[in-house]
Image 1 (tube, rainbow, N blue to C red):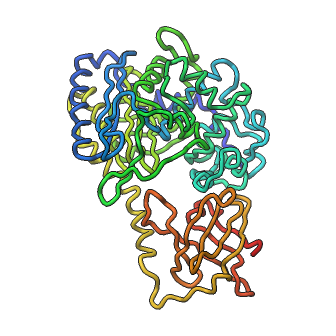
Image 2 (cartoon, helix red, strand yellow):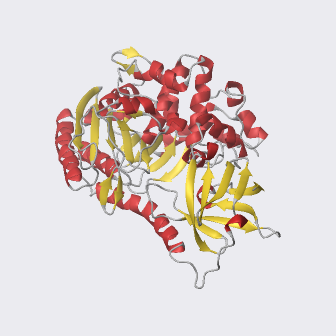
Image 3 (cartoon, rainbow, N blue to C red):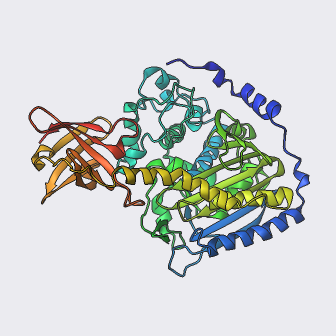
Length: 518
């Protein structure tokens, strides 16, 4: 693979994008405090309405303006059907909102000359490998935080879903073929960013979770914030995750994101996150003290990779280092969304020139409520009126993004062909299968049924239901329990399976395992 070195000159690229192609936003003093106060009153009413309409079970909002926290409030319930309410101190799992938080932590290390954004991963973490030698030798922290390593977006997520830990997932990324040439394409990768963060912490000799506390959470007094799932579970005042079941929100699934803690494993409150927003809008200055050097933090907001148009609001979007950088209807904004498909939605949006920021955390998926409320607030703050029903627009966008894929899977496997071909005897499929990426998989009999076990020591078990011939179905997603996924077998000349393809582990064409024993 060849490196397009023009992409490396981020300073020139940033200048062209931010100065030449787009006009700068209006000065900060154009948003008067009384305009903000009026916007907050309407935002509160909008949030109350969303919860009353069952848009989400619960949410919390924090707003910062001119280095002051001007709004902190919770709405709705921590768990649907239970009486405990959400407040500003309710701890939420913030999912990919963790990424800009982690970028801030690495910026703190960069500002102390502990590491550089352009430090090579080969020097920081020599054991890490991509699938090809050249990208492996040149890969930097900057590459991983801007999602331009070439790794496919879902690489490692599949291994996490079947129980592998961080170390094993990062080791096995070497088996994943690239989606694009090195530094030539944007592909959002949880475990790519996780490697970038953990490698950046290596010179300290301390684990990432400890560095996060030391460099960000403790200095800002973020006492309820952690990058460890165990700490989240210690809080009595915490929000459950919710998905829709038969049209109602239900707390069905728990999510331990420790394997990807820098990318998706932070838990926090809007009270704590508002302090982080103050720091970022203050260019690294907090309560009059410089905690992070401005030039180290500034680099996180340089637009490096094009993301196209915002699908709802129409702004032109780029990715920096753990941050979306967007030029939209209200000028320049920095932001990031977060989601767990098992029940979390989060968002931060900052308008740096106006020193205005909003953070929203919600305990449900899928929903566009965070974006809808954020866009509504921005309209109110800048223009005094809401342009459109942004909550509905974003809800529709999320429905169109996820609904068709689920419907297609259901339609594909709605009914077997008529007549369906019978399955072979169970012992034709039973056995041990293996590939370097997935590891061991065992198909065994359980009465008249087949069971698939994958993950470390067979950590995940899936029942297989015959569909047609040598094709079986399983239902691997707890959040969409009626969504089928195929497990197919290739049959050898001896009448037994020689290989097996697990569809829900095959996003990157690594879901085929060879039979290695009975």
